Amino acid sequence: MAVDRSSSHIRSEVVDLIPALRSFARRFHRTSTDVDDLVQETLLRGLANIDKFQPGTSLKSWLFTIMRNTFCTKFGLAKREVIGLGEGISPQPSVQAPQEWSVRARELEKAFSQLPAHYRQALDIVLIQGESYEVAAQRCDCPLGTIKSRVNRARIQLATQLGENI
Image 1 (cartoon, one colour):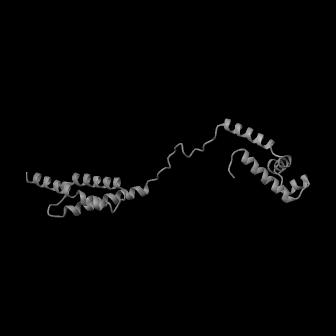
Image 2 (cartoon, helix red, strand yellow):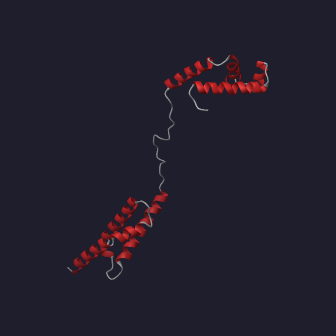
Image 3 (cartoon, rainbow, N blue to C red):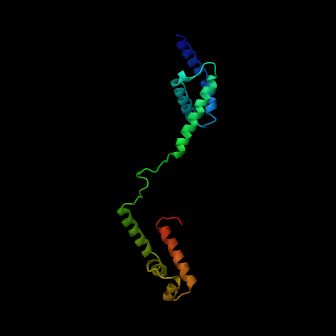
């Protein structure tokens, strides 16, 4: 029966040490939820192993050691865990519906047809046919800088008509 009284006395001392445990846990964690979890885990392990506590020694030091060891164990496990590499839906690329593409293509075609003829010709040669600016300048019989300006201005007008930011 003396063991039961000693055990209940130790349990009441454990309850009295909870504020000190919370204070010590703040050295390991910043958030209050993590602090609470660490204190709870320490109390759980301490009470589960109360029979291993040697009366006459410091209960506070014993619980602090349990807390430190609990933190170190969980920290070591967390370093080895790989988070987010499971096969989920997020790594799969998203593709817009084909209806969106056809609508955007019609919008582009309409905006392209509204460009002045010399802009359309410059865009057609450089962007659609894939020719160089030099080839486009020869075909349009104008200086190289003029072709570059026409392509740039046509691109800006198209973007504006399509509601895009440049």
